[in-house]
Amino acid sequence: MSQTIPYKTYLEESEMPKQWYNLRADMKHKPAPLLNPATLQPMTLEELSQVFCTELAKQELDDTTPYIDIPEEIREYYKTYRPSPLVRAYFLERALGTPAKIYYKFEGNNTSGSHKLNSALAQAYYAKKQGLKGVTTETGAGQWGTALAMACSYFDLDCKVYMVKVSYEQKPFRREVMRTYGASVTPSPSMTTNVGRKILEEHPGTTGSLGCAISEAVEAATSQEGYRYVLGSVLSQVVLHQSVIGLETKAALDKLGVTPDIIIGCAGGGSNLGGLIAPFMGEKLRGEKDYRIIAVEPASCRSLSRGKFAYDFCDTGKVCPLAKMYTLGSGFIPSANHAGGLRYHGMSTILSTLYDEGLMEATSVEQTAVFEAATMFARVEGILPAPDSSHAIRAAMDEALKCKETGEEKTIVFGLTGTGYFDMVAYERFNNGDMTDYIPTDDDLKPGFDGLPNVNL
Image 1: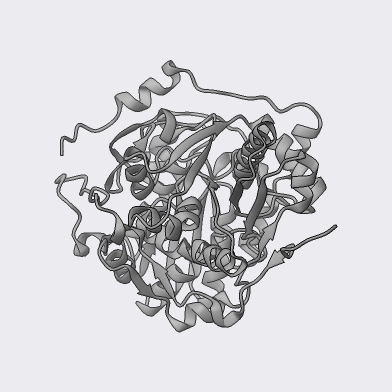
Image 2: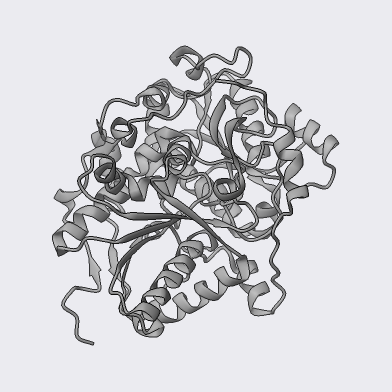
C-alpha cells in the first residue's frame, strides 16, 4: 500500500505537553458556576475543598488561566504510556471506499485500557501531596475505576470504587483488575451508604446509574477522615487534565501538515471529547481556524440532543453541587444497555455551554449500529474498541460514507478512547443476535425533567 503519511505518528518524548490547556480561558461566555445545594450560591474554594483536594478545587474554579503546568511527577508517569499514537486509518478508508482521510488518536495503550489514566494520575498526585489517606469514586464502564486504582497504587493511596451495578455484573474481570491494583469495589446502589439504601428503597431492583454511584462515593468520602472524592468526567478539572489528548493530536497533525475538517468524540460526561477538542476549539474561539466538531451520544442517553440546559444535581442522591448543563434530570435511570460510561444524565458545563452557543453539534447512534461499526473496525484496523469509543467510530464512518457520496476529500479525526477486551458480554450478545436498541420516549424522560431543581439564575 502506497503511503505518503505513516500509519502511526508518535511525538518525541520531549514533545509531550508540559502544560494542560484550560479551554475556559478562551471562552467569551464562561460556564455558569457550581452552586451550593443548600444556599444556591456559587461554591467557594473552602466549600469545594471539603469534597475535592484543594489544588483540584482551585483548578475547578479557575476559568482565566490558559495554561497550567503539569507537575514533573505526573509527567514522569505519563511517559510510561504517552505520547499516544495518532493513527491514519488506511484500512478503514479502503474498506469504506471513501475519499475521506480518517485519523484516530488511540488512548488504549495502557493497562487501564483508556484515556482515563490522564486525569487519574493527576488527581491521585494531588491527593497524595495533600497528605490524604485515600480517595473514593464511581465508575460506569469500569475504565475510570481501573485507571484510578492504578494511579492510587502508584502513589500508595487507598481507593474505594462504587461501580454501577449493571457494569459490575457484566464486567467481572474489569472489577478484578481494580482489586488487583488494591481498590475495593462495591456495586452501586449498595446497602453500605445511607444514600444507597434510600435509592434501593425507592427503586428496588434498579441496575444503577453513574448518578447513584457518585452519591455513594461522595458520602463515603465526606464521612471518613483523610478521604476526598474524585471524579472521572464532567468536571472542568478533568477536561483540563484530558487536554493532553488534544494537544498531542494537534502537535502530531501539525507535524504532518494536516488540518482536520471534522473532529469527533463520544460524549457521556464530556472528559474525552473536551480533552480531544480543547486546542482546536481554542483556535475556533479565537477566530484563527474553524472546525466542525461532533459529540456522539448513545440513543438511550442523549443529554445534549434531548436534555434541557438548566441547573441540576450532579448525582441522584442530590448531595453534590448543582451544575448548569444539558441534563436529562438527576433522577434519570438509563436502560441497562452496553453504552458503558456514556450513561451519565448530564454533560460537562464546558461542552454544554459550547453546544448551547452553536460551536459544536451532537448526534446519536443506536447500540446495534455501534457494534456493527466496532466489529468492522476490529476486523480492518486490528483494535477491539470499547463500546464507548465505538460511538465515535460509527459517526466517523457515517461522515466518511457521506464523502463517498459527494466525492469530497474531507479529513476526519476521532478519539479512540479505549479497548473493549472487558466488554465481551456485549460483543457476545451482538454476535448472537440478542442485542436490541432502546430509545427513551418523552414519557420516559418526563420524571427526570420534572425533578429538576427550581433555580433561576
